[in-house]
Image (cartoon, rainbow, N blue to C red; front, top):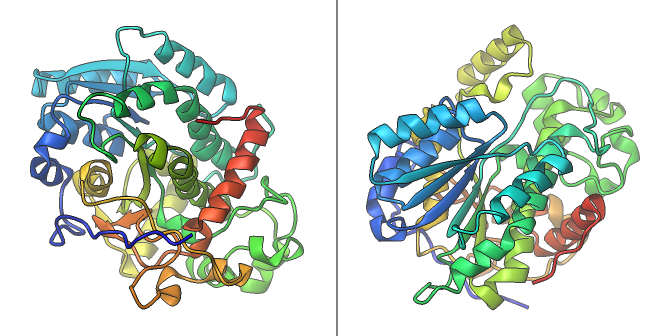
Length: 388
């Protein structure tokens, strides 16, 4: 099956320094009156800046979800003072376990005065856990929190998203699930044979092995050492970020043609937030300085949420390209290496960066078939199947 070419974004001039408030102001009718849920909200993070941008254009209700009720309430109170025209509700959501995701979904589904959710932004995440750790479900913590928790929570509240898509006048693609990923998705594919990073990298199937050159350059470690190693924190994080984008493809496969629900992934940029809280502070500082000296551009919170807003509301974005790959080896290539004469490649349009469709993405996280494989693995991990 070959889908038609994905359109570009509405505003080609948006880029690395564009703010979320600027993006929101460009699409007021896509935001006004909407009910929007954002995970991972605290006043110092990207979730807060995302909520601020939606509130600036008169979203009807913003549901702020996260682990710590006090931080959620602080965010809600701060936003309510600045944007009295928008209502705010908080939802305690602990994505680190399936128990936490199920509890939050049950609470939300019990809000009978809230029949529909127009946009879901899966923004929460963890990073840089220094050693291999498993959660209470026996799953590596990056993967458990960043992917499995969101996969389960999203599917359990799907009735409210479908209800939004079925409202009179709802345009196709207006109801969206946005998965905040990272350029870290380029580091590692999904290790279906070793989700928990227990085996030496060089011993697992070649198609599941990480990008050794990228790791070597980033960490300053010889590639042979990495091949003989098992757990790599940035690799485990990268696997979870690959999963975020593939989750979008799995959602599109089930929901776009039937209900008009669109799902996209994105890289917000490099932003100094609390994401590095599990690392030794001095190691985190040294690594950040190294990246800056290497030319990495760092954004502030407002710039770091602009791509989330583009993914959530730009009407020019539509179903990603679907076309078969020639071989499994193509999964390790970049999208630009597989462009057809029409400029399209497998999964083009599912991943954005700096407010535009991103071309330098490994096909292992833009492949529709990989999205299906991950969906099946995720259902296995949560012990439940989801069909729509």
